Image 1: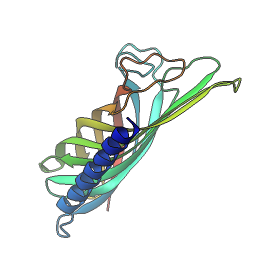
Image 2: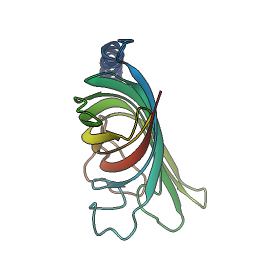
Image 3: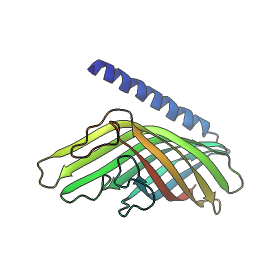
Length: 199
């Protein structure tokens, strides 16, 4: 069973690497390629997050992150880091958070200053749950994916804004101490808005 799991993880890592290299190749044309950095803020909802739905949730716990990459005329690639405090909800006596590190590919035509896009990729989903008494701790590193879409609007050559909505899901089953998951794999949705700094 352990060998099967290692084989699956290795296969996913090879696929992940191939997708990342393909994405970088798509955006390597020096004439049209443009680097960018996007600091962003957002919130998680649905699935295993502390907010069951996007609207009407009394306790939207924000997340922050940054993405950096390269975009061409119709496609691009990025690496993204995101951190969400109190991901499972603001529970007294429990410190919990979620961290994601993803390599993504996005595709969308640039229409004047506007770019609608679809985006997806794979990477790390890390959960951390700790009771403040120090008696229980659960920290889990998982391989997962994300998929969604959004809109980028440039206000000039170097500054713009983008917003998107994505679904995140782990590949492997989870058992998070003290928190019931919607199913055996951790999953949630995320909405963000960010500042695009292109160079």
